[in-house]
Amino acid sequence: MTTTHLNTFASAANPANAATALPDQQSPVEAKAQPVQGIFLHAGWRTAGTWLWSRFRALESVNAFYEPLSSLVGELAPADIADIRPTYSSGHPPLSSAYYEEYRPFLQSTARGVRGYRGSFGIDQFGGQPDRDFPALQTYLNDLCETSAGQRKIAVLKFCRSHGRMPWLKEAFPGVMHVGILRNPASQFASGWLLRQQWRNAFFVAAPFRVLGFQQSEPIVRQVITECGVKLPPVAPTSYDTYAAACDHYAQTVEGSDAYRAFIALWILGAWRMLKSADLVVDSDLLGQSPDHASELGARFRASTGLTPDLSATRDLVDEAKRNVRRMTAIDGRLLRPINSAALKFLFRQLDTTDALQADLAETVRKKVALANDIADEWRYY
Image 1 (cartoon, rainbow, N blue to C red):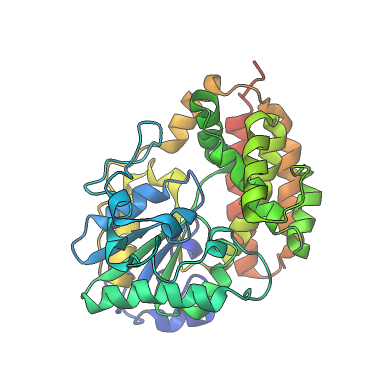
Image 2 (tube, one colour; image 1 turned 45 degrees about the vertical axis):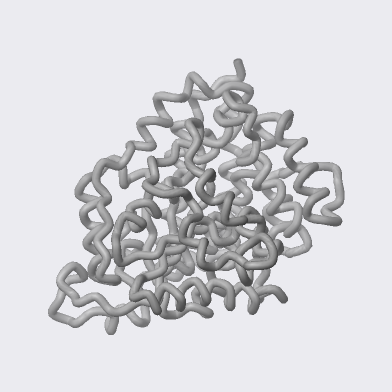
């Protein structure tokens, strides 16, 4: 993690503001926290985003909302909430209350679902301009934030479907701290792939196909699909339910290298949008390896928001990934280097690497991909 990506709220993604973000004579840790409307945690699936969210949820001054864009939010009823908890296979931390408990006051009285939620929110968007449903999304998220503020709490929202929309959300919610969560792609992919192997849970293998398939009309998405050699399910995405079912079926038998192509295509798109827009980037690989890094992040959060989540006792996700290499089957990791190289080339084409901030962004991603290559080199097709 570079110094740029550890800058405090409002300076990392906007260097022009860096000089005014903090008093000249104060370090980030010493600076007085400014009021924030909320914190948006922009995570990918299997990045330890739920763990980080749970650390904020433990604070009394926080109203923590889990996955506000998930389709499950549109189906909730009061009787459902208590039963939706971490499963043995999820890898999520123990929770003192069910995932969606904070949504209870927002449930509709005459229908299922949280007020203001639309099913279209469940697929990330990568267009250059906000889509037609974005005003409704803004209203929905604003309701969560404003209601929390009325309770004298800070809303902390943890997303897994927001990387593409980060530039729009950044502009729409300037009073929110936007936190990106980045994990090396091999470890992240392996976490979902092992769930398919062990539990026949192919949700995380199918997810990139769903997003890319629904967004393939966007030029940038078509480009990354082509450059990473992604093979989408042979079904036209005419409706959400039909295409989602096709992706789920496809993910049950897709070859490992083809699954990884879709995964890395979405990963590189998300990393590009996230690193350009985030006020702070949390490196979930480094978080479990360096207590000093965890302490520094805690200090950054305190300086920017007044909140001090306990980031100690973090799992070492890199060590876990390296210990699990023999469990990875049906994929030869040596084949992934050229796929990763193609993803990096795609990213570099989007950036002006003569710009210091964009060059720093590219270097951050390059290091993550290099780590992924080292981890995946040990995977074998048994």
